[in-house]
Length: 210
Image (cartoon, rainbow, N blue to C red; front, side, top):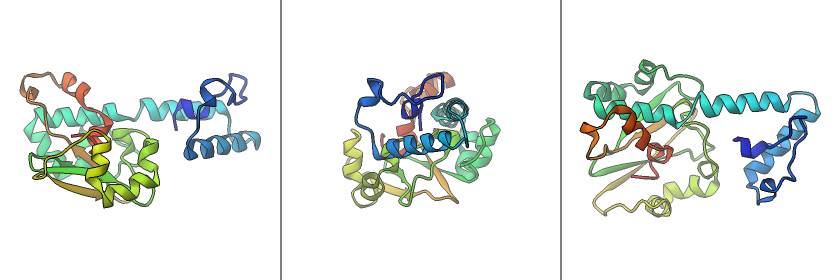
C-alpha cells in the first residue's frame, strides 16, 4: 500500500472523489480502501495511524536498502561472498533487518544465468530490502506466468535475454525470501558505492530487469 492507495483529508475522512482517485483502481487498491474505511469507521484505527505505518514502510524499508547491499557486493568481494553464503547475516552487517527479512537467500546473476523471483501463493517478499510488494508482483497473472512463461514476462518488462542465458525462477515463501544480485555495470570498479547504489532498482532485485 502507498499514500496513493489511501488518500484522505486531515480531518480523517477519505477523499476518494479527488481527481487523482477517480482513475481506475486495481482490485487490490479497492480492497485496501474498503478495509481501511471499515477499520476507521469501527474505531479500530485512524487514518493518522495508517499514514504513520505507510511512512515507516516507505522510508524505513525499501529498495534503497537493497541497493546498498548490491552496491557493497559489487565493490567488496569479501562482502559478496558473505552475502551469497548468508544473506540475512550480511544484511545485518549494514544495519538492515526486520519483519519479512528473517531468511533471505541471494541469487547471483551471471553471464549465463538470470534469476527471476515470484511468490506463486501470495506476495512473500524481502520487505526490509525491497519495500512493499508492487501490485503487479501480487497479481495472479505474474504469479502464474512467471513460472510458465518467464521469458515472455521478462520481455514485457523490456528484458530480452539471449537464448543461451538460462532463466531460473525462484518461488518465495513465508520461510525463505530471495533477492537477486544483478550483474555489475562495466564501470563498477571505478564508481563510488553510493553512485552504484543509485543505479539499482527494485526491478533489478526481483529479476524482471537484467
